[in-house]
Length: 198
Image (cartoon, rainbow, N blue to C red; front, side):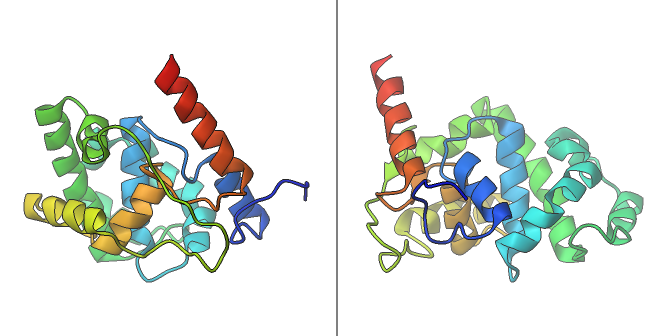
């Protein structure tokens, strides 16, 4: 392990890789946003490590998380996924993924992109937290994650409870919840400042 200061939860190779390269870094690509939405829903009741270990298998099984393809999955495809031992085989979650893909496309049709829709909740600017140590853990939910969850549920999305939505917001960089002395926290702020200036 190198000498970089990281958030305390980045304590295994799989978490270090995810922490350093993805978590909290702003995501604006719709395919990636759809992937994270599906994976966060799949995590419900499980550890994030379980999801990360199965991520490549999920990518393969779910056609690279292309919402246009996932939206067309029929009963035969769902049965095939239920027989895939490499992914999380939960019928409710798999059905929710297909349902959510259709609604995701509706949002793209009405807003131009899912990116535009979801980032509109934070005025297209990440919320920067100020957690100095492990004891200052981020909340499981916030009033904003409550609102996003409520709005998505109203549209018909499944597995988008407030806790799942807050984890999604953290993952795609809508909030920067790295501890303040973490090197990623500083990199994100630097990029944000640079983007604001350019």
